[in-house]
Image 1 (cartoon, each protein chain N blue to C red):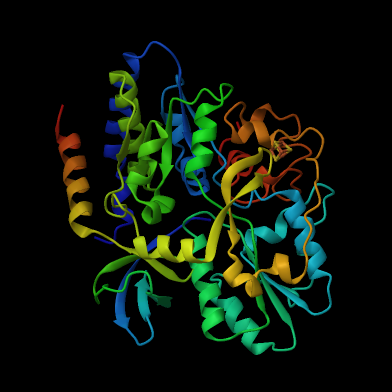
Image 2 (image 1 turned 135 degrees about the vertical axis):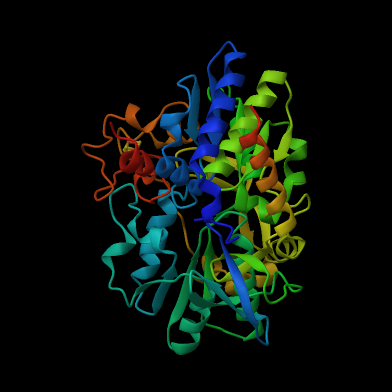
Length: 73
Length: 359
Ligand code: SF4
């Protein structure tokens, strides 16, 4: 039930509402809890609300770490 | 990057399992890890992680499915509310399937009477469209969901709605973790900490509990990395909280959400289905918002109810036994005919076992 999925913000509307896109499907969401989010960023969506902006630098860091694990022996 | 598909690379999965295996060789006893989030339970089941890690490593499912730990008496009270002519119930989907201890469910009401919503905000719309009805939202969730419900109550206040209330059975996780860690029967060596609860709370919120844990995401690589970090801590004799989900979880969490949650809810003692009352783990609606509290408005009483005979959910959620130890598992108790709460929600331990791990 605590599922949250990464959704890309495509439009920011008035009243803390935005449109997000996931797998080609657009969805309206509430951005009250991530007021500084920008178009093009990813957010985690839970029960109609964006609950966090995805940190792309951190995502790349863990990918890098995993790739290091993969290439190490 | 789409931040989903890239987290299941089979080569990396193999490599991580190998690293876990190597570290486990240095530990002379079996290791018990517990995941405390229903989404982890499902993800571990679906990805088959349990079958690829060494036998020495036991992955136990904790009380992290909010639906499963909602007491039977709350279900009965909701059913009683649904029976009132003027009431429309709004709820997340899984709740309509949970039987109370006598087998009654909200699912027996017509769809117009008990409405399933994806977001609690839909309940506000329903209340606006039905001014002659009393719309009650069943507030069942942990820290991921509770702030969203709190915000919904604030939206109801802003819109001066007089026909919207919430029946809160919301709960918080950290003190429950502490209770599990302190339970001598549970023998848990470390926790896979809930990723999305931690988005709100932040990693630092676990610091004072004195538990060993790693905050993990939900894709196979995320979970295996979490397990790997936990095993490494055990091998080194370290007890600390680490973060393996830094693309989502910060040290301090989402402070706006914490604030809204704290504004609307206060901490109360609350019963967990199968576990009994755990002090200071419930979220009751503050006096200031009592007009929006269904408990007050409808003078709700929660009957005390015992679990169906033979159901071992309580022990399963504490990591004392696993679903297959229950004599009812897979014969009398099935996902289509759940007897206990752990079989109801797709995130329940028994249901996930039934679906993915029956041999
Ligand atoms: S299999 Fe059914 S009866 Fe047994 S513990 Fe699980 S939910 Fe309870």
